[in-house]
Length: 120
Image (cartoon, rainbow, N blue to C red; front, top):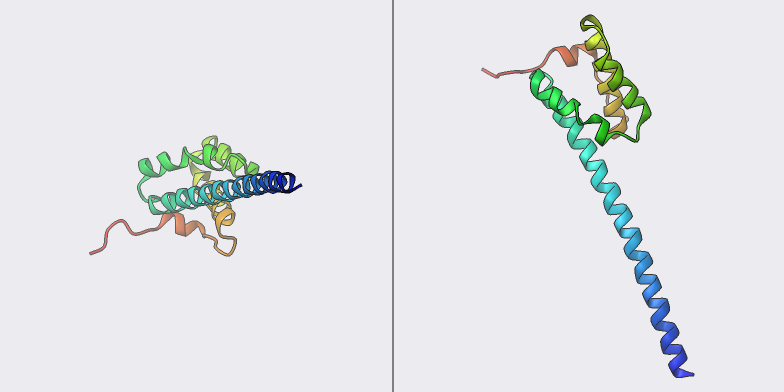
């Protein structure tokens, strides 16, 4: 009887520790993805006055935000928009990206077109 109790305890302990390990991995992956999204949005905002660099970061959107259909649609729209509408679409895209990581923040169109490039 003692052997059976010990064996049952070992099996339950193994199952419990495995379940906890799986749960921890899930939350670690979710946290890592959230941080990747946040880093990408900050990089796009930081480089908005440097078009070639910003374009590099914009090209990462389909991979990093592939789970967000609204962001993907705006990204595709940006690629197919005429020059005179690009700032408007970019503003919409950036606001949607920002809302995905911080719902209390938004940008105006002038926040995209104006920015510091150098400080005297």
